[in-house]
Amino acid sequence: MTRRKKIYEGKAKILYEGPEPGTLIQYFKDDATAFNAQKKAVLEGKGVLNNRISEYIMTRLNGIGVQNHFIKRLNLREQLIKEVEIIPLEVVCRNIAAGSLSQRLGLPEGQQLPRSIIEFYYKNDALNDPMVTEEHITAFNWASTQEIDDMLAMTLRVNDFLCGMFGAVGITLVDFKCEYGRVWEGDFSRVLLADEISPDSCRLWDSATNEKLDKDRFRRDLGNVIESYTEVARRLGIMKEMPTVIQGGVH
Ligand code: TMP
Figure (cartoon, rainbow, N blue to C red):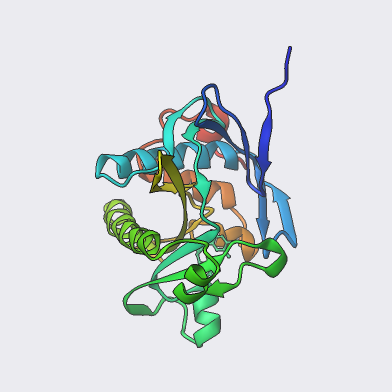
């Protein structure tokens, strides 16, 4: 038996070689980290929930023409994806002040922003993912001006769609982070949405109570992390296909 080849291991996911050239397998771990991995835990069932929630969101986004890396889910923890050349940026879109924006600008958490704001962070753990501007991105060749325009337009479309999708089930999308990659066709490349979209990478508040249903429950030691992710999946209508261990909740 040969062991499949690990291509990359991140904090919450592992990428393995895929069955065909140009494909990879994305494996969702139960590991949770915050503050650049200074805080760590294993949250049983998180990987299964994020695999399924991200599948659901990427599939819906594909349906409205937001091209992304998702091909199909393979099992509880794995999905087949297109291999992309990751652009080393975290693209954050914010609708309501929270987290680092609130800290940086002294805005109370929960304050509606005058409009959606997009920020770029340079993906570099050693530097703690510093915020960067388009000037840095083009000067250091992390992405071209065309790619920046594509990422801005795609992120706004993702935001509009997700605000509506979550709003319909009583969840407010406060902010989220996404990542992009390029695929090459001859001399030309295209930008695809990559990575995951899940309660690990979004701030999701119950619209009626403002209760947090996302990774801030872990970052801020609020407890009931898995229960909250499960509630997000339940409201999106995707709990039916979940294994019983998750369906019953982890108590
Ligand atoms: P922030 O307020 O801490 O900058 O986070 C903004 C959004 O980005 C929030 O939805 C959480 C998400 N995020 C990640 O997905 N990964 C990260 O490493 C960080 C810092 C934030």
